[in-house]
Length: 263
Image (tube, rainbow, N blue to C red; front, side, top):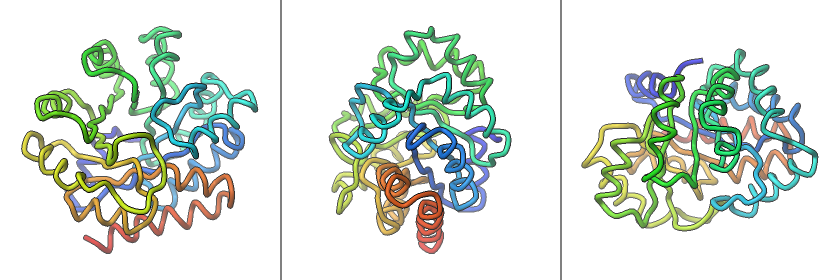
């Protein structure tokens, strides 16, 4: 499994945009999660984001909240998630990003947490409630372990904050397309194109756009606007819950095909 940065370097050299699907670990169970990771890996995913179920998910919309609630009700815990990742990661081409809130990291201890996820084969980390002002306590030790911490830029971020986030983010920059929580939307936030331009003016790091992307045409649109990656979560989480593994494979491939056709 390559690093997040190496994956983007390889794709950029071939002028190919990245598709980053998201699923919630343990919904409906961890064995299905393991199968889903393989399905996504084989059907167009370039990087995969895996959400750790959490009881108070501040950035998650109703679909992902419901998935986390179901996973927690089945007894899914972080250690079980990492045991599953350790079994599956050697067979994956797509690097894995772990999406988790800061409390489980703090509770376990930053260095112990990072040691454990690195050993499991995780290559990236997204912590949506980690303030920029405190990010360095995670960024430096993560980098030492080969884990890239991806920081988020919000539509409300002022220019000076955008510049600082762009400087510190590792792997790529996660541009949140809308103000609020994750979820499927009929159209993309109107500021996304402008925000991409603001970011491009201060960095050449890859930029992934997420929150609200639920259709191939959405993914294609953000690539047309200049993003390097489309991040798709709620639509895949709901599809896995309602329709199963085969459906998410077809959907993931349709997203990637639409992005490639654009290029």
